Length: 255
Image 1 (cartoon, one colour):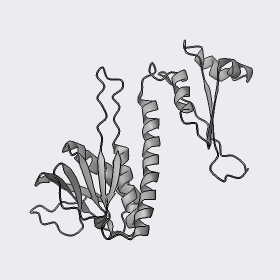
Image 2 (tube, helix red, strand yellow; image 1 turned 90 degrees about the vertical axis):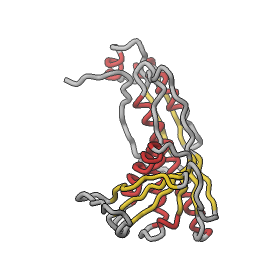
Image 3 (tube, rainbow, N blue to C red; image 1 turned 45 degrees about the vertical axis):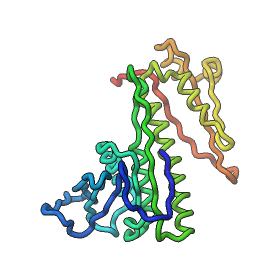
Image 4 (tube, helix red, strand yellow; image 1 turned 135 degrees about the horizontal axis):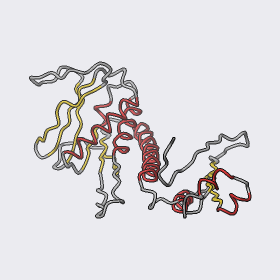
């Protein structure tokens, strides 16, 4: 997904998808009713002059949380793909009335990015991933706000990329995600701040990890034990936070 920032006003464009928030009574014959606990609803998504406009009815402006906007962004992505749109034009002004405009924008774009995931590798004819373009129109924003927004969007890109990476690991079938392949995927994440160590069967046996060895006897694939150690910039020596989990690369049946 590519994101570009523009300082001009958006004046409409073919194959572009725009979003409009309607917090007051919409100029439509049928007023949509929000269900109990519902923060928003999509009540119009129509083509106008070659571009698609999705209108959203919100319950209110002050009580919309960042998570509400994240969910909202995912819903809008659904409309975006349904209408075969090529580009999302995101105007920052429509977010200016909310209590935390920048965080609301971040939540929205994060939800939009998270929804842009499709697993096709296991298909006989995998489809190519379609590029999605987002143009952010910052007319009226202060330079410092634009800088902060760019930083927030980079954080969201990192979050979405990590979530998509994890989804792919879980979605691929066992024959395409063996312990060795899973270990290679983990090793691909190595960086200055992230150390990745993979123990093979001999090392697992040496460490007397009988449970892991016992489970692996049911497969021709040898087990792997993956250790990932993260130390952020400027991290001081302290008690580590440890997460322990298992990556099942085959079907498991519970009794």
